Image 1 (cartoon, rainbow, N blue to C red):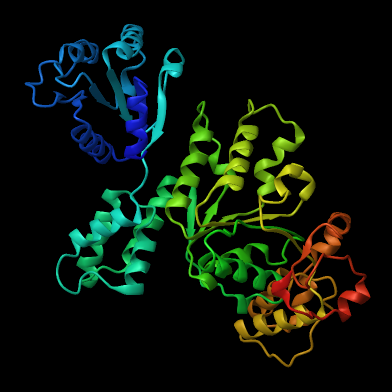
Image 2: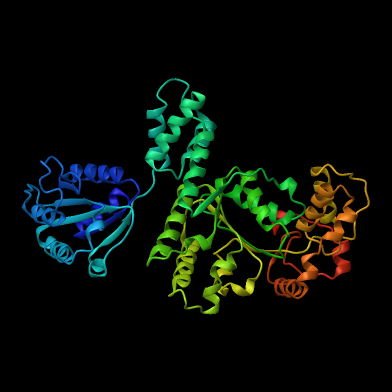
Length: 490
């Protein structure tokens, strides 16, 4: 919710406004400031204290609060009533009727009712009479004000790039959370630094349960091959700072399981200095009516508040497969989630770079992969010989194995299977050739699906390794293939 929007709705005589917020005091203070500017009369009521500046005699009666609001005088003609957590009382038929009447007559008397609550739980009788606004998280400018107040002593507030890193870490926190994180940083380190903020943010995201903040150490150097994909993503993100009109959206990664799709998404965040947020669509599904839709709005709102960031959605086909199959058992929840997410992908202007991975494109609706949803659809095939050599070298060194030992026949192996062989060799104290006897490649266990995936991607997807479209290769071609050309020009 922005103040300018709220004033427009009041001027347009929307008598019922529901403000969804986890910071009621902050939201009420913003409305109070706007009321002073616009010369409106403002009353605030809650069950514990009744109306502000009263003796509290009417505190226990929400029905009386609506009656008393009509008697409050206003020299300007416009009166606002803020009801805190009033959703708790809307199960009463008398209260529903009274509130509905208040909203109807308010258009003539310019009386406005604003309910401030952490959830949107509007009874069906009132849904047409309320406009829903979402209270926005603090902007970077507001976070800087908070940091300046907390770190008021010399040397406590960093300058330059360190200050920008501090604000990056604070983005997505509420005012109360930001104040607590800044204070914790001062207690621990004697100055404001990002470390304590990332710790608190990780904890808050886990409590929320919708997003998970990944703080791993993956780098592109740890990921063999995928040269074109790496260069393309780095180049589009660099362009973001050079040309504000050309905003990157992200990439959809289709590929054989174990070819590095998830690891790439996590490594990209570290390579570009962006936090990586992982969204599990399955967690968005709620048991209450409207809860799933609220969850996806909240998750994407948090991601936008934490921009610039990477939003990583792993195996997205599993969360959206019901849309393609025509599933009706969830009362259309999957369809509504999918529609909202598609609209956001197409229209959002925030610096949120989306990386979605998929193992089975047939389970995704066709409109999901069309142009302008993503910057590109890349296919990650089984690694060619040169890639496998690089991956062997990395994992032999990581697990402190003999790099000169004879390697097993790794034709049609993925990077995950090479890693598994090296880990087992270190665990069992044997050579990688012996450890390979315990590894069954996915190209063997799911040969038909892998072949079908390669055939579908051929001529339809960009290659993650070579510039241009992916073309299915024979086994002999995969053994000989070596990357060439400028991968960033894909």
